Image 1 (spheres, one colour):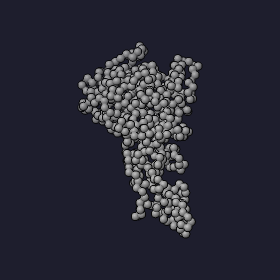
Image 2 (tube, one colour):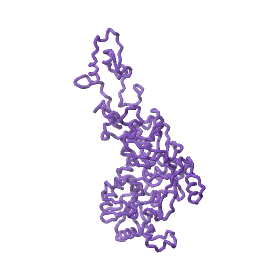
Image 3 (spheres, one colour):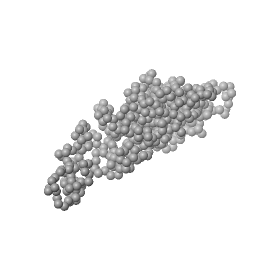
Image 4 (cartoon, one colour):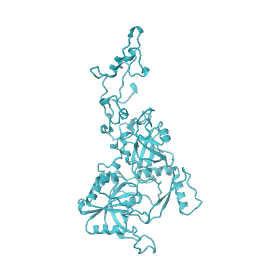
Length: 539
């Protein structure tokens, strides 16, 4: 912006025409850079030009500051934006400014982005003056986003661990069918297991040992929380009929015990395994329940308590207020029995960013990008993850997208770059996506959207918990009528209507059996019917 720049203590050089150094090449008669030269071109009479040009003088000017030659004008004093983003020249191989560069040369030099006294990002009030220009500053630093939900971090408050002597406690890890089951468990304070596991749990509980359970959801690769057993597991009749009564070969999930939830979180299994290398995960062969040694249980417990709190359910109906930040573990929420959500893959989602100039490129290439410092934040993305795109110019949220790849570096090296010969993109952390459902966008001021994303800090762009991703997808699908179409199609299939017409969304939906009952009824589920869910796809 030159002299028109309004940024106080701007780290970029602002040089008036009078202060610019004279170009030595032009003074000798010719400069290959012409009007684009960084130095001042002073016109002289022919008589004042040397008879024989000496262009070696220009080399001295290019090397100003070296070998005793007078240095160029010193760089501006570093301000609060010093090294808050990576240097694009360094990423391309060489930075001409060397150690004097105001941008970070490598992730180890990155500093925390400055914030205002009220906790908002320092650039938040300047978006109108920049015209919605997509810049590195709009992608929040990983230290101030919900990336902690995925990587672990400082304890996020809540109840302290009830187990002070892990060597005198018993630990189990259970595998649930859906996150909805876990949310219902937090409200009802109960869980169901099979007889073989109930016997071991009852033995430990009867002997005075505290019994703690860690919960995960099928295919999510995350530990979602921890609860303490508060009663013996007893047999409950689930209405299976006389045909199933007394059958020893059917080890159904008929043993219910009371439990108190102490933590709801979203800890990656990879982080848990690093903390507890001996951790064995529950599988179908182990009937979705796995016990663990006290040392392993203690390590997992510490990792869970070092992972910040999240909610296991977010409402998208807009008819109830969300729980307060300090009431996540006391004001539990679960979905109504008749609520149908848009089917999403278990696990976290992500919001990428674009502006009006790059949105067509994002959709045309099927590639979304992030700055290099968000590589860690995007590590939770895997094929099938729910993805959304936020246009920072129009302040609109688009979706629903599906990730086709995990986050990788420079899938398209020239993407989002004005240089066709670039070897790395200015947003090199990239994924390939496809449109799962094309919906009208949500405005940034939408009150329901703001309730769902109330825990996000540092802007819209960044990771989402599974509950947030599912709620945002369901909100988009409900506002365009796709959710109602899906419900009508599902009801028609379940009633045996052979003339049911697939919903007119994208292409005919693929069918997904959400298992339950005795087939793949993960630990804790009561006997439920298989649901036929339609998912629009572009296959």
